Image 1 (cartoon, one colour):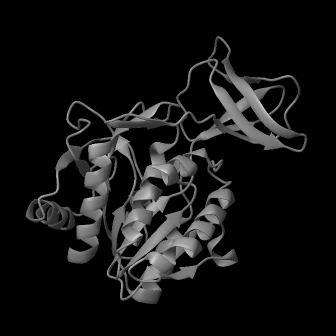
Image 2 (image 1 turned 90 degrees about the horizontal axis):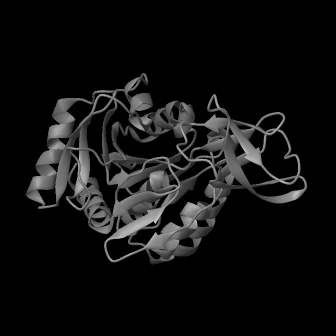
Length: 303
């Protein structure tokens, strides 16, 4: 889990994904010589801070967002949320501005507005994220930003044995999206790929429990095409991968932008469930992580 810990510790809130992209480029260039098939890498100005890996003759794409929730420094010690952070007063926040590294504390006023407590003013516009305390036990991983560094980790593990497929590392998902439309356009027009899997992390609920397998989401705020979701469920059963079916009325992902794109994308959210979402203490069962990787490996072969 060393690589997962490194991913969690990278400062990359929505809008500031370049540190994550740079890390991934270094990692992939070093490791891909050991992979079953060497991918083509697509990145640069036309992709902003996103990254695409193309293997062989792709039929299906994995979308994994690189960004995290956090805060932006406003005026007079004020903080604005990036996405929907859920942390208590006293939580340690970290970042860097023109005067150097920052470790400050999160505070709230009586109206629940967020502020930082620090020995000096922090530059306006500075991004702050949770200080990571990565812990591993026999059964669980607990850390800030398992959403979605675990989705990125899953994509990297699948890349080791992938022969035909596309892996897309996207941006801005936690704060409304924006990168998926041009990424979807590129892979649809260049390789005619319109099948997608969303490698993201979902919630532990009364119907989706830790240690019971990867969650296949039949719907959230958005509704994917049932025919496609049924194929994924059939493959999971055929390959005897432990899974759970999720049915929710809230929450969203990169799948929303795929569904509203002008291209006929089929998509499904497939991910491990976590407790304490968007807090500094997100927790995922190792059994669900293993099932997630295993199912993705089969789906990329069978879909």
